[in-house]
Length: 105
Image (cartoon, rainbow, N blue to C red; front, side, top):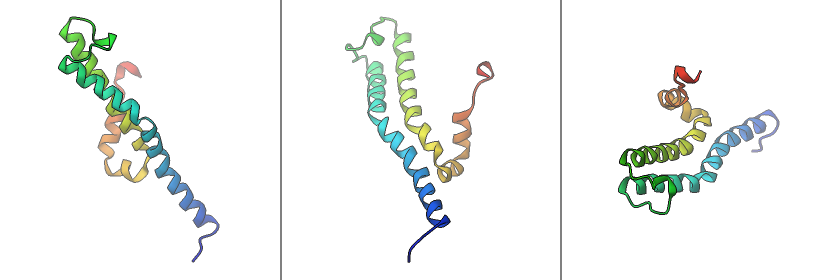
């Protein structure tokens, strides 16, 4: 049974719609690992190799750690929103991630 014409085109578009976001997430994977590691090491106080955590103020270290961990999570999750069935299943998360505060509109 062969698939031709419009049916083949629809299947190729559907496959591309799934594979592209996954490929983007995989490409960003090492950045995500690095950012998450920096954030976790900053919380534990074991990040002497980074100038970002050189300040003696614990508030600055905590803020940088939260920033790095949140950035890692968002970088990994954002491309997955492009997958239609996944986006429709967790629509609330999709809307929450796309929310922009009034100050940035």
